[in-house]
Length: 239
Image (cartoon, rainbow, N blue to C red):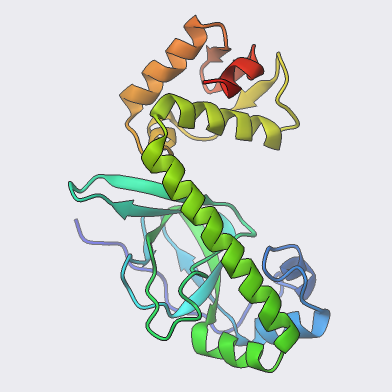
């Protein structure tokens, strides 16, 4: 099947993207107003259709990307061709940062839009030139990229070493924390189907479904369509 193409680059940012909104995004939140204004002047936009590939694993790094709206996943392919989702992005998160500061850096994974999305991008050469003029910013950016790499390494280790039930339990607990928990009786609303959740966990729908029903049998949770009622969060943490 031919890949969907991204839309044409737009060099003119819409009025809706302001320096104040940029300040609410990771990576740029410690930049002063003037620096954020310069970043926006260097930036462009890409509108992605569902299924569009923004960049591929092994492709030369050309820009830093920031998801403004929509849903983007980053995945790798195993030797047998199985897709392994290593990150699911939310608006306000950056991606493609890891290879920015190596001359021949390549993207470590493929980025694909899961739904119509809008991405702001800062060309690599322009960003590095800007940071050389802002040494204080440069050090903070390097620290951010270093932390990002450590997080990705921990995630890769978790995916490769942990069994699906543990990854699922950790995912549900993380979702519960995002929604103010975890606590007994808390209702988790799943925004993704079991197939999408399985892809995020590097598994398949049948395996994730069995794990959920096993948790239910153990009295750890109750399944109600796309809602899950936590019954014993402490039990999930011990999976």
